[in-house]
Every structure is written in structure tokens, then in C-alpha cells.
Image 1 (cartoon, one colour):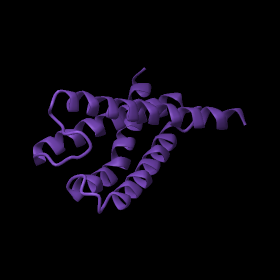
Image 2 (image 1 turned 180 degrees about the vertical axis):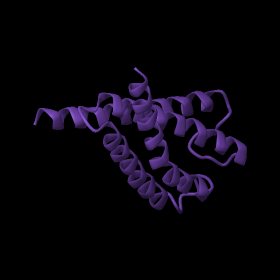
Image 3 (image 1 turned 90 degrees about the vertical axis):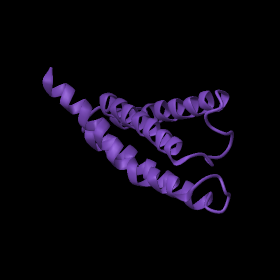
Length: 131
């Protein structure tokens, strides 16, 4: 039972790190006038930049998940990636008709969620092996 709580904590901590970094960066960029508030109707290059930093933060969050996991770090990272995929699919479907930005952005988040989670877990495992 103790490991279940550690597993849940590892996943929650990693997800929180990714969410806080993503939303914090969004707010900073909105305040700086780089992003509009509440939508992504900007140039494709800026949207790609948003995708890039969000995926870097997903890698960092997944690394933290793997580091905090009591066992099977890659499994924990992938579980968080699957959860991210599910949440991204729900977000893409729910916001489809809300005119918040190009539809491809939401689906890119869906596609990139598991690979970024895998990369975070892989980076952790590689660092662990080098010690």
C-alpha cells in the first residue's frame, strides 16, 4: 500500500511541475505581449514555440515522475504520458468549436504526449545507469 501512495505522489508531482511550468510560461508570454490572452490565433511559428516549451516541460515532469517512482520508473512515466494523451484528446474534442486556435495544435499535443513522457523516463534511466 505504501508504494501505491508513492506511485501516485510521483505521478501527481510530475504532472504538477509540467502544468505549473506550462501555465506560468503562458502567463509570462501573455504579459509580454507574445501570446494573446485566451487563444492561440498567432503565427504558426509561435504555436510551434508553444508546443516546444510545453513538450520540454512534459519531459521534465516525466523525468520527475521517473525519479520519484518507487519502482519501474519508465512505467510510471508512460502512465503519465497516457494520462496526458487522454486529457489532450478530451481538450481537443471539447474545445473543437470554441475557436481558440488552429485545431492542429490540440492534436499535436495528443501526438506528442507519450513520446515526451518516454523521453523524460529515458533520460532518468540513462542518468541512473551512468552513476
